[in-house]
Image (cartoon, rainbow over all chains, first blue to last red; front, side):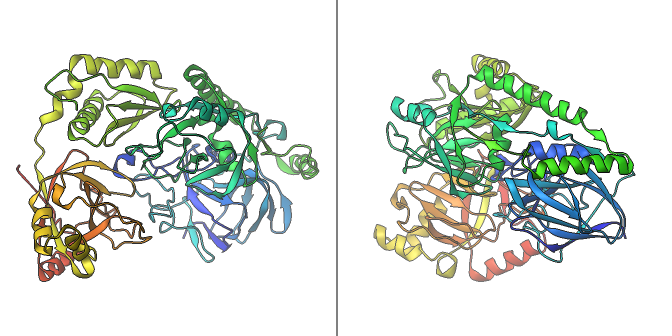
Amino acid sequence: MGAHLVIERPGLFSTLQDAGRFGYQRFGISASGAMDPFALALANALVGNPRGMAAVELTMLGLSATVEGGPLRLALAGADMALTIDGRPAEGWRAYALQPGARIEIGPARAGMRAYLAIAGGFAVPPTLGSLSTHSRSGIGGLEGRALRAGDRLALNGAPAGPLLALPPSHRPAARGPFRVLLGPQDDHFTPEGVATFLSSDYRVSDKADRMGAQLDGPQIAHRDGFNIVSDGIVNGAIQVPGHGRPVVLLADRQTTGGYPKIATVIGPDLWRLGQARPGDVLRLSAVTAEEAEAASRAHEAELAALIAAMVEEAGPAGLSSERLLSHNLVGGVCSALDTDHA
Amino acid sequence: MPDAADAPAAPRLLDAGEAGLVVEFGDAIDEALNRRVIALADALEARALEGVRELVPTYRSLLVMFDPLVLAKARLREEIAALWATGEDRAGEDAPRGVWHVPVLYGGVHGVDLDAVARLHGLTTDEVIALHAGATYRVYMIGFAPGFAYLGGLPEAIHTSRRSDPRLKTPPRSISIGGRQAAVAPPLEIPSGWHLLGQTPVRSYDPARTARPFLFTAGDALRFVPVSPAEYEALCRAVEAGEAVAERKEA
């Protein structure tokens, strides 16, 4: 029998997520996929996986698990969560090789919301409609369409030995500035004052925030002519405004179609930051042009490639000790991996 | 109301982020609009543009999702305009697709709102069933939940405003009506404010049915066929055994 990861403590809401389930939205299937695809890609790159391969998405709380049946390489990236391996402090953004019997323990998020536990070679779980992503509402994907539970045994594909890569702290993704949005498709359903309010106010991520979407609390946005439209398709990051006038950003597990007007869409390169936003975080929204959004998309892709290129191999105890020093810096708050500074 | 025979107005192209474009033909629930949506989806699919990720046809608009690193939005706009100019986006409008025949067990625990709907309209339950099963419907779109089919063509005599208190759970495979529309629900206990008339053995969605996980596609035609409790049970067993029990017949 090959290597397994056996879950002891499952965390708050830990699910398998890959880049998403595409091609079936026209049949009512939500795309789902990683809420922070940037961190997923980096976690995968650290263990030599394709960037969209499925990893365990951890929400707010980490998990504990043991390795059985064979060795593995893993990496944790995204929200800043304390990691220990056999009781010894380890850290995110770097790969570790573990032997059977090893035990990992991941603590609560100190900054950010979601972290990704990637394992070299990925999980030996059969895909549903071409994807391992879990959509718990419809019970699709992942492990029986649900979040992980204590006692779950996650079978692994296994991978040949590979380098133990690390992403230097200076290169870890940090979010700055307002969330960029492209107005539309139904911005004309709002008064000019409503659009101005939307673009000039502080909004706070409410408690109504999960994988489906996040309601933002703040000044109400005035509709021009009622708040019902004939249902149409919804993209990741679409911001709909129901009758209560507060914006709701629709995310990975969103319904495929909906009947509220959508004032704008958070652009793809900024979506990962929503995956890391916590209830209570204050953010601003800033409109960009279609050309600026396309340019941002190219820049984001280039940044991801640059970060992957900047990963360095950790060789032996010397590398480990230097990494320890850096980890003390991290704990001291010099550089928070996912400081969602939205102002 | 647009008429396919005339030269209809050009659709509006609306941004849905840098990776989405909405082609909007109108803002109503209307068969002519929906035909244009689906014809454009078919034409774009046939065009097989590199970078197009998926198409989501809805009542009155088509959402095109694409990879902006592969396909520039300006180019996609041009392609859609070209399909429009040559009329290719309307070529498939009248293509016959056959008619799905969907068995339904009406009333009782299978359709708990049948009696109330009949009372509301001053009809007998048999009359409601005859009206509901006497119409040919059009699948306007699939959305909301996996395989949930929104149908147009409900006879006016049983148009029924949605319930004021939506249910958080409804029986799987429910056959329901809401406002001017009808629906076939997937084998999931979805929330719904529509009136439940019956239940079908048919699974509009079944991930285990790998060759055809989704039965219906937007643009399909569909009729309901009343069945007895004994027939319903037999059909449920057949579905359990992996047989297809919804037939698609020539129009």
